[in-house]
Length: 417
Length: 167
Image (tube, rainbow over all chains, first blue to last red; front, side, top):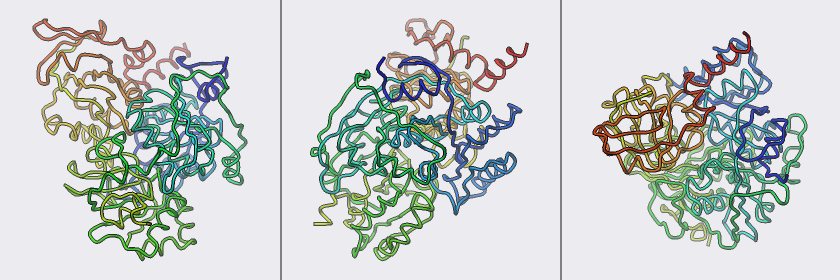
């Protein structure tokens, strides 16, 4: 029987031949929790009265660290104490860590063919490396700490084929926003997306991660990209254990197949209040108060380079605050070595160490009533980055950098000429 | 199980940031979360909701983050069930795992009004207006999920399974 990537990986991990619609118990390779989701998971876990499967566990404080207040400090301490109590090696303290999804990929936990779950909805990011990865809740994470397995309904799959050469300033963010604009925020509900085509093969791994990261914004359970030599190269020297690449069979069954021509994709923005509310950046034009560059979606070195190339020698518009947040220590160090911080700082941007803080309206860039932010993050729901009457416009790094200079949302070509 | 409760009506795409905004996630105490339940969608909800009340919504309820706090906030508020045209995947699993009834229905949001009370019969998967004039059928909860909810959630369910194996 021909299988999709989701069916193949879940079959391997369930050690039986399964297809879409079946419910299986499958062996999980890694389970990740962060400082928002870990504390409840720890409480639930203690009820099992069993040692945790520490090799499978990855603990990454990132949402409200460095501690934003006493309550956050207590949650983060709970994580540190748990790691110490059970001698969990894969705990990443601030200063060596960063945003959980970037770290999971950088530190070699993610590899093709693996089944990874995380108590954070953007766990689907790892599909970019050919893994089946999906978000779960704290309670489920606790059961994986204890048992190493979890039940899954094998999803149906939708295929998205993107072919052709992308235009100037068009990136992975524009591809995924265009797809979500097309199918809607529940267009892939309960399904696994497979994103393929020569445009995708030509993308660097970092932009593929941006695409898989936002699969959840279309409701998807996973968003998988066939792994290739670029993934092998990325994993050299960082991957833990061995891995085997998995591909869909030629005649696998898909619930839907959609095709896109790369030349039709332009720099876009998702306007408030849904990621599917997509329009060309050139048609948006609204003034902005804040420009945010960072997050698990677009906080990688490649994203910072794109923004720096636009900001070099220019100034952030008067009345606009620009915030740059590298997604990990490695990204931070690289940006420093490459002189990107000097470019951002000279332009008048504020630079911080890695944290998720502002993306979910926690701290380090919260919006006041009536304020508008253009952001490389992944959600623009009502009140997502602050007050209920603030607005978030989602875009790629080129649009965010150009808009920061222009003081309003623009197509990058308006600033770069 | 029968529940008589006030209906709280919501639209499509009620996301987890509306159910429990991110700024409250620095404390996972259930009563703290319940005090801010649905704050982004209806400011009166948290102070006026009573045990047994029923949330009815449109499509894609619970989309967005994996935060289990969204389910905890509703459950601690006393909400007996959420009925929606469809649910986002992670919220749906979280609800089952914490023992909150989540039922799909294509027309509850057009048949019932915000503020009225209705009778929900979980076992018969129907909901009926107080005067008996309007009734909708709900999609049956899958058997494996119902077993988990009836045990009180995933952890008690797994413990009961372990108990069964031991004896």
